[in-house]
Amino acid sequence: MKVDIIISADDISESKIENKVVVVIDMFRATSVIITALNNKCKEVIPYLTIEETLEHAKKLNRESYILGGERRAVKIEGFDLSNSPLEYTQERVENKTVLMTTTNGTRTLTKSTTAKKILIAAMINAKTVAKRLIEINDDVVIINAGTNGNFSMDDYICGGYIINEMLKSNKDLQLTDIAKTASMVYEGHKDILSYVKEATHYSVMKSLELEKDIEYCIRKSIIDVVPEYYDGKIILK
Amino acid sequence: MKVDIIISADDISESKIENKVVVVIDMFRATSVIITALNNKCKEVIPYLTIEETLEHAKKLNRESYILGGERRAVKIEGFDLSNSPLEYTQERVENKTVLMTTTNGTRTLTKSTTAKKILIAAMINAKTVAKRLIEINDDVVIINAGTNGNFSMDDYICGGYIINEMLKSNKDLQLTDIAKTASMVYEGHKDILSYVKEATHYSVMKSLELEKDIEYCIRKSIIDVVPEYYDGKIILK
Image (cartoon, rainbow over all chains, first blue to last red; front, side, top):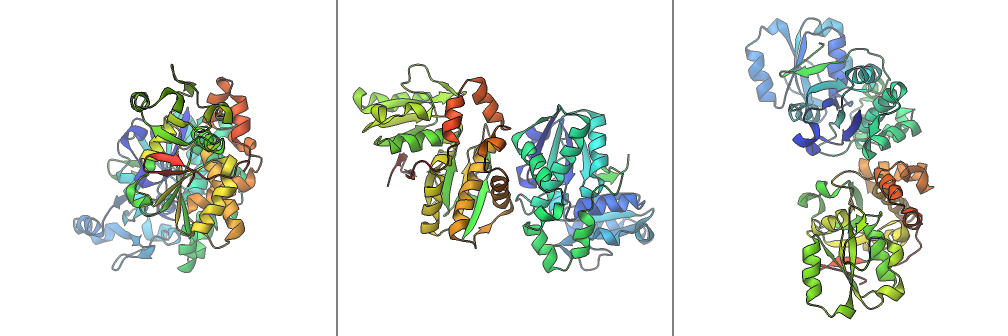
């Protein structure tokens, strides 16, 4: 069982992910939102690349049946119901609804990963359950860090390291590539996630937008035990 | 002064390196060979992508004036004078000679970097002097890890981290990207290079070929104070 990491959406190539089980991470904050919304019983999350596509799809639905969510430059989109803060996706807001979502890095990563055998959605908040699922599937894994605008993002990277370390507890014989091994070592050296993540560019951006509560939530470890899956254009619990 | 890292030759793009000062690292072993050969007073090192090109160029030269060096799959090339072991590039062998060299990852990285403003050659063995030179130049830096067959290589990565940490001693205000910051932290956590590098895929390959002496040499810190530069197809001391 091999485990590799791709460090940003820009670095995804078909040859790297074809027939692999892919784990998409955008912990600040798209995948944390998706996991939270599905855990709070939304029906499905449909990710879109553009605001226009999102609104186009919305037109076809009953206004009561969906929530418009997402961000541009980490800020709520005008006319949308919710921003990209996972704390807003409460059961009260999302239960039984379709979440139509557009985010920059996370959505781009998902749409570029469709040649994979299976696409799972991960963040710190569901990492243990993701690791358990991967061990059960027992197939080669590629963890894809959404990154930020095509660049490596410390937050997504340490999250991958945490998932790998959880997998190693069940299977000591994982074959890790050098980049996966390093992520695992980075996590080992920074189990207090904040000690590492506070150096991240993404963290500074969120701090400057006063999103400390989102940060606090997103770095909590394994508080949710669902593993969303991206399938046929939708993210659901299978 | 910004510092970024590109993690493999496959990830080099013009937009990332244009007008930047580039530092190429392939510490196991191409750049360690180049630095050692120039320190031992060879006239120049000319890197080639293929064995054919190397031999083609050699035909034009007096047999006494050059050394044929390089590797394929880490092994000496048939008919060549020297392998890719820096220990073979002694003053006795290389003084005043042109080294015609073909290696897989290192040469590919150099030939893909030509749109940079300046291309310096680094490894553990000359890291401090490289850092000093970069601080003097005082321009944006992109450290390019040759990597292994297009993949991230732990050895090149920690070497970049070491250079960055040496730069930070003179300039605390470097603007590090997340990937550069992580390399610096990996080095901080593994100043005994072997504790990290022994996990590298590349290290296992070298061990299996009984190249322990090369490993020992290549991980020595800052034992050489020259900084080779790739300019107009040749690597020289400017």
